[in-house]
Image (cartoon, rainbow, N blue to C red; front, side):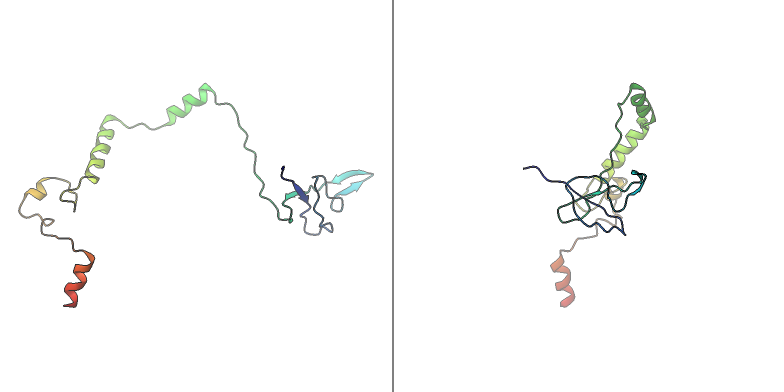
Length: 134
């Protein structure tokens, strides 16, 4: 079954609140001069209860040309090899997990005896509350 489209004038001072099944002009809001419409007022698409439906703007589509493609490709910033290697190292650094607790800039930190991270322990939620209650 095909959905019906309904139309209605939504001007503020419109006397005609009827919902029509055709678009057309609102006869009470359109002004005429010598039988010709001078100031036209179109009806707006509504649902069957009279609620105005959202208007979808048409996007003008045009064919993508070879020149458009080249311009787009030239405008894209590409990383140099050094920038790419730095990005890869930064990614590895952020995803590097030593002992499952922390990540370091250098591996020498955990090998030394003065590393503060080795002394830290992670408490589970229940352990920290039990020690304070006692």
